[in-house]
Image (cartoon, rainbow, N blue to C red):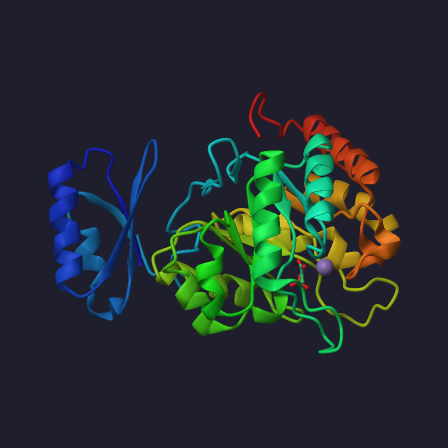
Amino acid sequence: MIAVLRQDATESQIESLCDWFQEKGLDVHISRGEYQTIIGLIGDTSRIDTDLLCGLSIVESATRVSEPYKSANRKFHPRDTVVKISDTVRIGGGHFAMIAGPCSVESEEQIVTVAKAVRQGGAAVLRGGAFKPRTSPYDFQGLGADGIHMLIQAGKAAGMPIITEIMNASQLDLFEEVDIIQVGARNMQNFDLLRELGRCGKPILIKRGLSSTIKELLMSAEYVMAGGCSDVILCERGIRTFETYTRNTLDLSCVAVLRERTHLPVVVDPSHATGAARLVTPMARAAAAAGADGIMIEVHNDPSAALCDGAQALTPAQFASAAADVLAVRRALGMEKDGEN
Ligand code: PEP
Ligand code: MN
C-alpha cells in the first residue's frame, strides 16, 4: 500500500503516522520527493482501512499496490535510484556508465592490459569473471580467488571500480574489495543467495534469467531489497527464444518496461545477448537509445585466444568505437549530463 501525504504534513505528523503503521507490524519506506512525500507499506496491509487512512488530515490518497514487488516498485519510490559505485561513478537517474572487460580473468597481465585499454576507451567500471558458471564442467571454470585478486589489482592499476560474479554465498569473504557483486543469469532465482547478498552492504547487479519474465527479475530484486539493500541494478542480457542466429534474443522492450515499473537502474549486456562481436555495437547503440543506464560489454585483448566467450568479445579498439557511438546517441537524444559520468 502507498500513502501519498499532503504537502503541508509536518515531520512530527509523519513520524506519528509511521509509528502507527509500525505498531501494526508493517515495514515503512519513506520516499521524500521535491513536492510529495510517499509512505510505502510492506507487510500484511489487509488490516489497514484505506478509507480511514484517506480521512486523515495529512493523507492525500492511499492505494493498494497490486504488484508483488514493493521496494522495487516505482509507485513506492517515484524518483530514480542512483547507485553510487565509487567516489566518481554513479549509475541511474541520468548517470550512465560503460562497464567493460573480459568474460574471464585469465592472467594478471591480461586483466591489467584490458583494464587500462577499456578505461582509455571510455569504460567507467571494469568487469571480469573469476567464478564462471559454465554449461560444461569440463570447460574453463575461472581462476576463482586468484582471479578476484588479479581483478582487484587491475582495478587499482587502471583506477576503476570492479564488478565480478558470485556463484555461492560461501564465496562472499573474497568479495570484500569488489565494488559491485554480479548475480549471473543462471543464479537469478537462487533465493538463498539473493537473500544473503541483500545483507552484505554492496551494490548488487542482477542479470535476467535465461527464460525469466520481467516480473520475475523484479521479484529477484525484491529478495535483495528485502534484506536491506537499496543499491540494486538490473541487467537485460538476452532471453532464450526460438531464434538461432543470435545466442539469445535481446529484449530491449525490457528497458522501457522496467523504466515504468521500477526506480532501479537498468544495464544492458549486448555481448551475451547476441553472442557475436559484430552485433554488439549496433545493439549497444540501440540500448542507449532505449534508455539504459549502463552498458556492459565483453572486451578481450586477443578475442581469438580467449578462454571463454571469445566470439562475442570486442577488441579494445572496437570497444572504444562502440563507447563513442553510445555517447553520440546519448548526446543526440539529450540524455547526457555534462561533466558527469
Ligand atoms: C557473464 O557476465 O560473464 C555471464 C556469465 O553472464 P550471464 O550470467 O548473463 O550468462
Ligand atoms: Mn561471458
